[in-house]
Amino acid sequence: MTTLIAFESSADETSVAVVKDGKTVLSNAVATQINSHQRFGGIVPEVASRHHLEWITKTLDIALADAKVQPEDLDGVAVTYGPGLVGSLLVGLMGAKTFAMAHDLPLIPVNHLAGHIAAANFNQPIVFPALALMVSGGHTELVLMEEPNDFHILGETFDDAAGESYDKVGRLLNLPYPAGKAIDELAHKGQVTIDFPQAMAKEAGYDFSFSGLKSAVINQVHNAEQRGETIKEEDLAASFQAAVIKALVGRTKRALTDFPVKSLVLAGGVAANSGLRAALTDLMADFPAVDFIPVPKQYTGDNAAMIGAAGYWNYQDKIFSDLDLNTNPGLDFPLADLNQQDNE
Amino acid sequence: MNILVIDTSNQPLLVGLGQDGQLLDTFQTDKPKNHSIDLLPAIKSLLAAQELTVQDIDQIAVAKGPGSFTGLRIGLTVGKVLADTLNKPLLAISSLQSLAKQVQLKQQSGILAAEDSTVQNPHPGKLTKDTVVLALFDARNQNVFAGAYLGDTVVLEDGHYPLEEVLDLVSQVAEPVVVVGDGLHFQDTIEEALSNQPLTILDHDQSLPTGTGLLALAQTATPVENIDDLTPSYLRKTQAELNWEQNHQDDGQDKPYVFKV
View 1 (cartoon, rainbow over the protein chains, first blue to last red):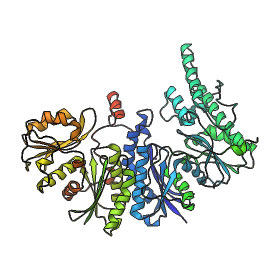
View 2 (view 1 turned 120 degrees about the vertical axis):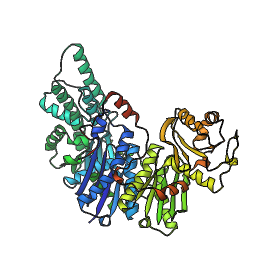
View 3 (view 1 turned 180 degrees about the vertical axis):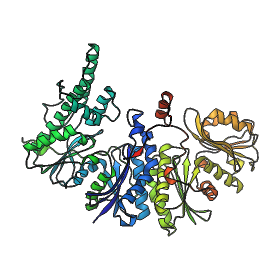
View 4 (view 1 turned 60 degrees about the horizontal axis):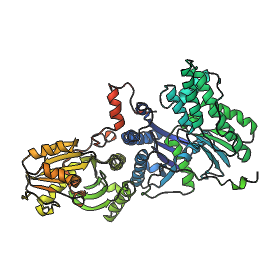
């Protein structure tokens, strides 16, 4: 049995968790700064960093108390060292390193994106090889995994992340930041009345682009305003969401067709989107041999439990760091080598 | 009684280990963007050199600012988490006053003489216990984080001020002045404003934190009551907050900015 404490502070959530064997969450203390950043319509890095320092010891104490463990019960300290905002990352990283030094525990460096994917283990153990659709405010990636801790990007966004396009459309509709949940709810009350263009639909590969869609939505609204027409917000949201989902599902279908995986993981903040979950559930009817493993909704946003899950993979692979570990704000997975697919 | 002292307020890094009021050993660097890498290994090696473990630390003293926002957070995160998890007292000391105290201590021991001055002293005077020590950090656009001290008396409270305002005030105190910190960034302005007083401007190397001032102030400081709530003395709101406050009333705020989910 392996019990890890995990620290996560890459954006605007301060979180410390205790996780057993990478799959059982003993505690997951999350402090969210959402109300603070709503003032500015997005995350202000310096403000985020300040809030992290205000909450680091509180979340640490809550996580240990909720899990009913003492430092001596722990086997390691997992921490997000990237990607993310450098000032935010630094607080969790320094906190984790200090805790590791204080209790002479091994330090485990964790890629935040690996954490999002590993959170699927809280649903059911990921079966390998696996494909992961990682959709968040900062990332939109299709990731191929031959085995745990083996991540290769099949496709990624050329411009906006899917979650970012939700926030931009949300701003247009005067919805509070972050807008994903509000648009999802609006979309369910509306009809798809506008056929928004789907970027790169005809192109080969697995990459995404969402900035064209965002521009199309903005144009649609402005043109309607100029003509004195009103667009039902519910319909606009439904049409926008349909276009996003179509792009995500289309690329995922192509990847599932080309790569014989045993499971599909849906991860990242946008994985909470009910429209996307429903569309992927439908898609899986075409792939009966593939397990669909969406991350449980309460672990789709940033949290430290997921870092404990990915940290467990590293722990098993004996991937540890010294106390000089630094942040890596631009950390990403390597690209997949698709040359072997050229014979198609 | 072992005390760990940490100063990450600016580019120089200072970690020291004190015992019964004396510094046993220190670790110092002066490299940009390096505190997050060096700080923990430095603590570990200082302890190891004295054949001590983390558990042997009885107190932690950390420079709480003002200074570089990111730098301060690195030192305070380590100080807060260490004090919290080891259940040891944490002392949060002004970064400016620590530097000033360090200068005063040097002066008392006779190490600092007028000839230490790196500038041509217009009125070379004997530095005495009546010397005002002005500690300042460059906060850009002719603004400074500054505090001024005469012995243990605070002449100017730590704050974010226009340089001119600080020099006006110090010029009215008819005492010799020693400037420590980023004084040389403003050499001409300071010399002109304080032309009627014996003046010494210490250069960058003479202004590196050594830990002596921080340790001395820690001896009489009251431990932080609530470690969770300790934040650095930023002494400056973020630009985003200042802009927001211009257009909004932050009256009691029905929703807390940060809350536990």
